[in-house]
Picture 1 (cartoon, rainbow, N blue to C red):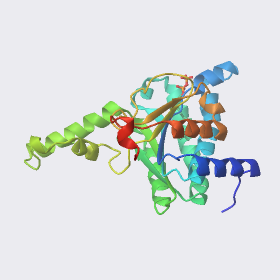
Picture 2 (picture 1 turned 135 degrees about the vertical axis):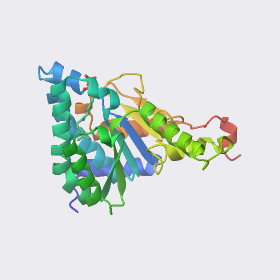
Picture 3 (picture 1 turned 90 degrees about the horizontal axis):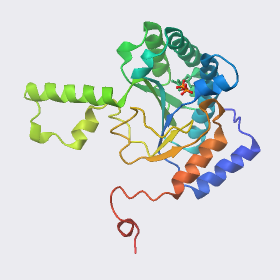
Length: 258
Ligand code: FPP
């Protein structure tokens, strides 16, 4: 595999790996494409097109750093309510990007996975996704999870429905329902919870993303619009994450050996 990193970037990554705790799972709300485009006098779709470069950069850099899972919020359940033209353009962009980036995924040994209601997606998008998932199935370095037609409430609702069915069929009793039971019925069942959640464009919300899974994730919000998000922004987020003390509800003294 050809290493496309610059010498300076390699040095920065080495420094990060030596001095920081690299998160096992990073989740990103890629926000600000529309505002980025507006600032430049472009149609909103121009922001989404420009955002694909940031996707590629983040995916490659995460794989190089040894991140195991990268989850990108690419299209929410609520995004179906956007103007028809924008939804159509996003779906076309997805098909085009999946075709174009298959080589990047395989060159970097990255497996594609999706979460969300695949039934909502146009046939062409679903077919392209299924093909890319199949063609990257054997890759082991990192899993790229695309959240498509996804929302945390959708995920919890489908989990509750499945649990209720199991109870109704007598396969599960209510006193056997624990937090782990819910986790095991979510679309992220085989994926550890995110350690770090990054949101671009400065909004202080989680916007119906991984509502259950973000319970103890560290949050990092940057003002940068998604199309401007590059490796240095990612490295800064990881540095910030690395300085945090994750107590998971305990007190400091319980975490540090005395
Ligand atoms: C949010 O910005 C962004 C989206 C809803 C779509 C994200 C899609 C991409 C980055 C491109 C394709 C993705 C892949 C995985 C190839 P916004 O439109 O809400 O921005 P605004 O808040 O400024 O209006």
